[in-house]
Image 1 (cartoon, rainbow, N blue to C red):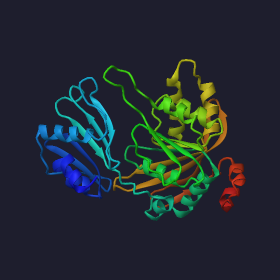
Image 2: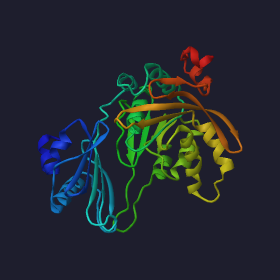
Image 3: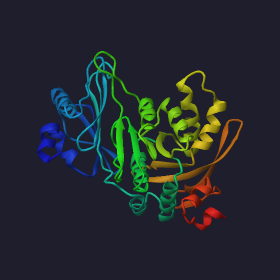
Image 4: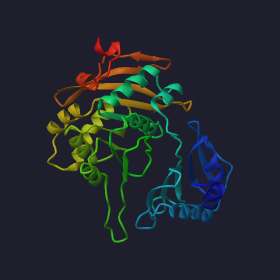
Length: 347
């Protein structure tokens, strides 16, 4: 969007939208407007009227084709610059419209760029890059605003250029720097309540599009089952999930497929997860606003009493990374890819 378009669409919010240091803008009420800068929250001195807030939302939604009304009191939409708009209205909220605009600030960071910024060490960046080239399956875990999508975008951009990549998201956020990419997003129901296209449907459709890899922006519900089935068919992939640790991410990934139906059992899911996921990358946002990878873990593939073995490769200890006892998963994948492993990986 040009500066003029920003001013027309966002009105008084335009200066915040144009400020590249601001990561997110949210409105709790017309008199309480917050921003996030450098990972820290700030209350602005900007005050709007209720009509101004509604007009900003209506103008922004014109770009997305998505609607907001009493029958659909939530909306999740992508703006032309890649920012993500989320709105909730009364009676879901008590009085005022609640608005979040998460700005697109990834700037096509590579793994090496993230290492240079201190999000990880160069050695971890090299191993992750080699892992992507080798075709291992990676799960990126963390909390809200921890940097999951940024890390995932960097991982996807490390995929060899000859591969065909299909990305599947609720709202377009990923922008991998690759020549052969097809991006798909979900669709909400129409006025008659039909026409909805969920993540599960998109994952199934992606398998008919000759992918070399599939990328799921975020695994939240029963689509976890479809992703696991796809990964267990020999198709490499990646995704993100909300969790507090690498082990919690695996436990959650064992639980979400149970939402797909009563006939799904833990006896089936546990070994499926153990064989489908190779690496888990845990990211976090600390109280100073710094985002970094705090743990890299691998799955050995071993399962005992539905408990999947998760081994730590690296863990952030507050001042430096500590090397764990884990080893790279499925070493043969790296060898088949012709990658010379680091000495630590073969010890």
